[in-house]
Length: 387
Ligand code: SF4
Image (tube, rainbow, N blue to C red; front, top):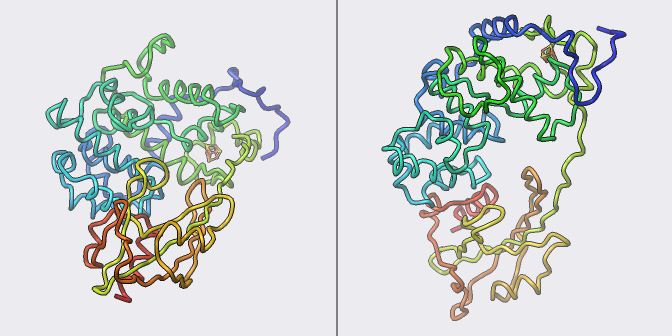
């Protein structure tokens, strides 16, 4: 739909023609009631959902596709059915159960949050948003989702999807990565969640203590709308419950808002992985450093460089073996890195000291107990079939 109306200036909204919040609330709630996906963490209506389930699923869903979480969540909950069981588990068990989700720091944060809840709150998620925000790994977004989905508190849960919906709805043309834009979006979302309350900007939304019926549903509906309908490219405006309220649609600006940002630079990483087996078929395993990518996880000895592939001489210096045979290679991507794996097969020479520096021989039937990244799991699965 073409329009001659000019967009708001960058970072400003056109206050004269702001969409009606009452209509937005009504439309999006009705749409969500009709179309909400049947997802395993939606066991109870938003606003009265079991905190442990929300905590686990929300941390899994950060930067991860729903389809992947659907695969992993049941297995994780079977292994750790309660806050207490997660708090008491070995970290390596938690990382192992997290395999396939990536961003393993989230798994550590999840367990640390469970431990803090058990230690400081008798095992129950606190309902005070400030106490939720103080939990390890819980930022503004997760505070909003936990507070609203579990306790119906009117705390906004603004992720990039929700921010995009709001920027389009109000034609807020500003850098989507700017903290000011996020603060603006949180203010808009707070006002959507608190219809009966006077909108005092002096009062920090995180301090609002009283439940407002429907806050959880509104937050969840906005998240769903951003994920499924108001997508970054080619939003499905014809299916959108807010199409008659949306300024970006009315002004033909859905492609321009939010404005494009410079993509993050990706780092190439060249990985040489050495698979060494002893006569009993056990494989040499080491642990990664405690910080950085896949921190603390296990792997076959791996040498990494970001400037060029490691040379055979360098590989042999890091793992004292004589012969290297290239066996396979494959590429793997994380959000910020392009990794190239070259897998070498090396035979253990009796007498050569390879199980040093924290390295140990591990039998293939113990691989499922190791915390492994996806590429290392793939490499070791191949090694196991050869053992
Ligand atoms: S009408 Fe289109 S641009 Fe506007 S909120 Fe809906 S999907 Fe997004």
